[in-house]
Length: 239
Image 1 (tube, rainbow, N blue to C red):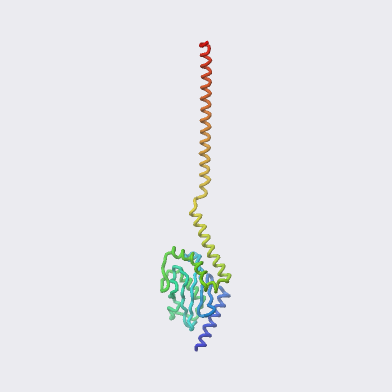
Image 2 (tube, helix red, strand yellow; image 1 turned 135 degrees about the vertical axis):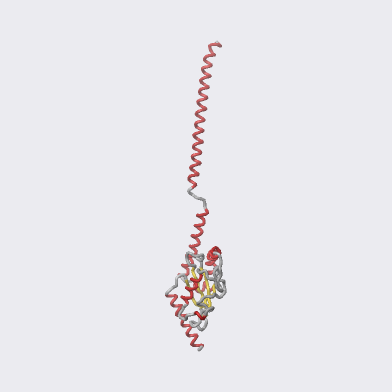
């Protein structure tokens, strides 16, 4: 029976891995450890338009020798604000509920279920509630955290699709930073009006200064004429 069981779970899991490689799942990557076909590492890309967007989350599947007759355990490793790290998660398709397990379910259906459960509000053993701000903050740091894990580098480091997802995550946060800077910076459209105002003010000052100079010249001219006339009147009397 032991030999038959090992052949069953081994061949089933290898076939599922080949299928995942040929038919990739959206936002999901998974691969078994080279040393143990019963232990898989998976990576979830944070779903769009959720606090997890831009995040990269690593987890682990541990299959029993009786698979596919019995369900695996699911453990999340990357901090997300949704799952407790290094803790088995209670879901209908995990080892918490063997009574609801369906042998027809596959690695792909399990991981798709986890990604859907991630954006739900249901709280069970191994999951948690937290604010959207905390989840967004953890999503931002999750990319670097996940990349630094040796198992991630070993299994996915050379995977072009994973690299592309990492680049997309980093671009997402880069775009976010640009949006924040644009929102925080002063309105550049106000600068020309300020400059125009200053120039207008200088022009007004210049015009007013010119008028004052012209007025002063007229006064001096009138004074000069009066002095000349007065001199012309007084001169004969003195003589």
